Image (cartoon, rainbow, N blue to C red):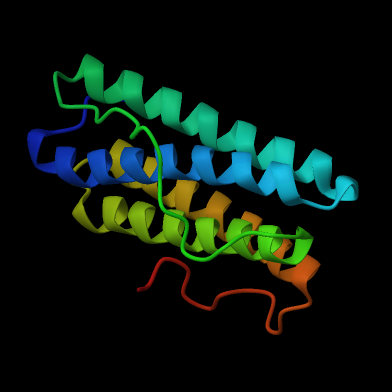
Length: 147
């Protein structure tokens, strides 16, 4: 990957901050999820950790600021059972999609735009999987990442 430009730095930093929040959220999801979803939760959490670590390395190598994770995060609603855990996972993926869509919109280089598209696509797929688990109709968001 080519180094991101300084102009791409803010949207990439926002995406990294959102990935930090996703890693935190998936810890809560894991604590309250139906045990039959353990594999899905673990895979999704691992995907966010990998994306977070890769983006941290990319920003650091480019001499751009890579925001650190916060000590804690405020959840958008109380998580108390497997249903609210699945809802949190779906909401987390929707939030991730917004952040990565901004990377695509502000990307100046092909590599940055490609990274954004891949991350946005991954988030949309994970969100759809959680929406299936919740019985949400429709299962897909027609415009993932659009606020």
